[in-house]
Length: 406
Ligand SMILES: Cc1cc2nc3c(=O)[nH]c(=O)nc-3n(C[C@H](O)[C@H](O)[C@H](O)COP(=O)(O)OP(=O)(O)OC[C@H]3O[C@@H](n4cnc5c(N)ncnc54)[C@H](O)[C@@H]3O)c2cc1C
Image (cartoon, rainbow, N blue to C red; front, side, top):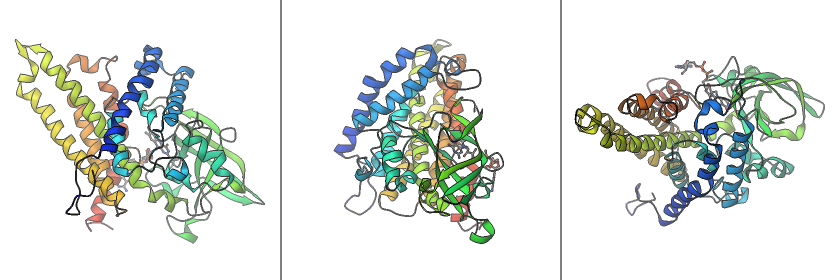
């Protein structure tokens, strides 16, 4: 997609983007599929890739690391980052298309081909001096992984009200608090941790929060949070009197929340792309099944109640994709995208929820079979409707943009 002669949005892809998308498909086939095959049942049945407490097994962890490293070597992993940070500086439109194409493979280990929550996010681009060499560069190369620590037992949607604090003590910061549901926290080399450094009464609702780089041997893991569908990926992070040196502040003191808000749209673009890619995968699987499976002497796709489920899914996925492309295009023009990104996040993840339910339904009992991926994608849809701003938070933002609420 690019700018057309009338100055508006065009839905055509350029040749370079097509090449990137084709090479992602080839990479998945050549590099990821053999790794998944070697893992066999350990991976295809997600309930076998975990220890009893939820911790992901070593062979699955090694497979993830291997995919990340190979993808970084091949130049895919962080290609959306600017060139001076080790990326290729591809546009948000190409990144959106790449994320969607990857998800259309079905959402298994392929997801580690392009940087996700464990990888370099724009927040980490604030790394300066030695921080770059120590933290940013190895994450871009896929050699280290990270995590983003904001949610706490007492706050999720209302994260500026966090209770974790950091106090200056000489040339160190003393951190106390607890985070939970932190993706990749047990396996990360370091976490980007948000803590309150100045009381809200002095700096307003969003001020007074600072981001610290805290290394894996400096924080403790409590229990695994084990969301159904993401077992072992999230855990509680315990910070009891953790001391970090001054040079571990990422970005400006007291300004981390504002910095994170600047990148909200990118996160929502990525999740929207993921949801749409999964929907496309499900529609293709279900479409094939209903033309082959017979009941009452004919393919079940001939029954309008069956075909209409998939046709509605197709129409909604198509509309969600148009919203995704428009958001990506506006981001490429540096336009304001708060409302657009909430529309995409809410709409695309709800479309996936409906499509995943339809895919299970048209597969009958096979839709529920644990060796099939359909229920796993129902769980993914549920997760996507909660992370990075729930449905309700997105709708609040949309209502606010309409001038209905403050
Ligand atoms: C798989 C997974 C991965 C995650 N990864 C991370 C991570 O890496 N880092 C991180 O920091 N966090 C992470 N989280 C946490 C996630 O960001 C929060 O769960 C999310 O922000 C919602 O917060 P909550 O669960 O505390 O729900 P709450 O904020 O308690 O909300 C509960 C319900 O109330 C509704 N609600 C709350 N406020 C309003 C309002 N103003 N108007 C209308 N409805 C409202 C919500 O929409 C929701 O339905 C993850 C969660 C999951 C499940």
